[in-house]
Amino acid sequence: MAARDPRANGLQAERTTLAWTRTSFAFLANGALLTLKDLHSYTGPVGVIPAGLAATVALCTYLIAVQRQRTLGHRPLPARITPRRQVYLVGIAALLLAVMTAIAQLSHGAPANTPASASAVMRSVAAS
Image (cartoon, rainbow, N blue to C red):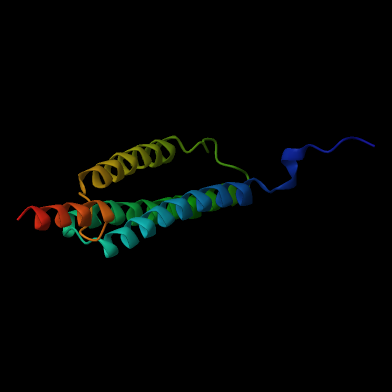
C-alpha cells in the first residue's frame, strides 16, 4: 500500500482560512480591549483611534481570509497563490497598531480615581 501525500487531502483552504480568521479575531479582541479601556477613562476621540484601527484591520484580515479560501478552493490551483501583498499589509498593520497602542498607553496620565492621584490630592489638601 502506497503512502498518501498529506498535502493531497484538500484541507489547505480550511487551514488557511482558520489561520487568517484567528488573526482577524486577535485584532478584533485588541480593539475591544482598547475600547473598554477608553470607556473607563475617556480621553477624547484620540483614544478611540487605536480601537478603530484594530477594528478596520480585523475586517480587512477577515476579507483576506475569505479571498484566500476562494483562491485555494479553485481547481486547478492558480499559478501564483502566495499572498505576499496581503501578508505584508497585515504585518505593517500589526506593527502600526502595536505602536499606536503603546503611544496611547503611554500618553494617558493616571486616572483621577487611582490611589496615587488620591494620595496626591490628600497631600495638597493637608498642606493648605
